[in-house]
Image 1: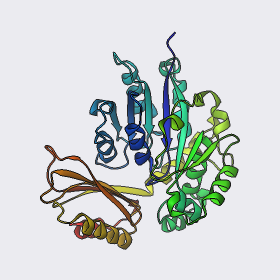
Image 2 (image 1 turned 45 degrees about the vertical axis):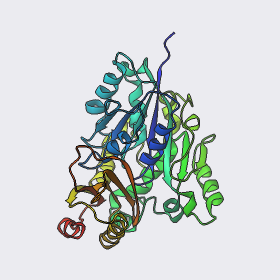
Image 3 (image 1 turned 180 degrees about the vertical axis):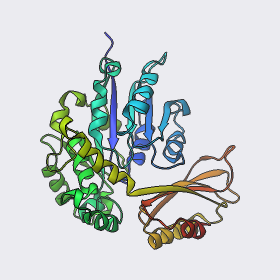
Image 4 (image 1 turned 120 degrees about the vertical axis):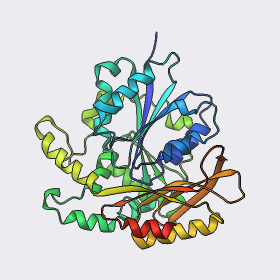
Length: 352
């Protein structure tokens, strides 16, 4: 008998560590053929590039599909369903499919899509994994330095007491089968209290696991057999207006679109880097000066044959060499993500 192909949905706010978790998973996949669907938030395929740079034979460019036409939960019919059907139609289909949502995606519509006729008999949601930025959740901001975003949204009467960011967080927690509390090395002894708080917020039986750099075994993340598409009714956050009930779709869309429109992203190209450490310090300062939420990208370093990968969440900048440059153009290409109204000319000038 042919069994359904399992799919794991990895969700979480911008910069929580989804890509890092998936990268670690691929490097420790134990020979599994894993296909990736990545919902980029930005104009540059950075997440896909980070993942295909793993050096893992089972993670090739053909196994990474990027959906960049908007939030995956808003483009299910146009992008996600055809992509899934193409993966399932391969002569040798993958052993497992991992879907990384954008930081703004609602997980419930994506889970519901697995009940579409073309997918229902062939693939199942093995589990929904929500990755949280531990220090940010502990501080009540959900992501690095979003106090200004929260204040702006709190002034919108249509949000009914809660901001879209808090609603999004609640949706991602409510839909999860496992919650990975990432960056616990930065919690200064407050890990246990935060884990207890999140367990109280989650559904009964949901595992809440601490992690550093998303380093969890593949056997913990995969093979959960949840069949999440069969119990979608249990995965709704009932304390706000993102129910997506049939009689309330229009109202929900208004809230959802408002949340997406509050963010913007753009790409900045700069000359190649002389000193990676100095470059990281410079990026950190630009992030602080302009309230950038997330910055990620690649750079070449003068005299070095390897590509430098850069990922920043708030002012914390991580950088590492991941693979030979090959035919890549020398220089740096960076995606800048933040709340609407970023001073793009000033940011571009500072980064260059």
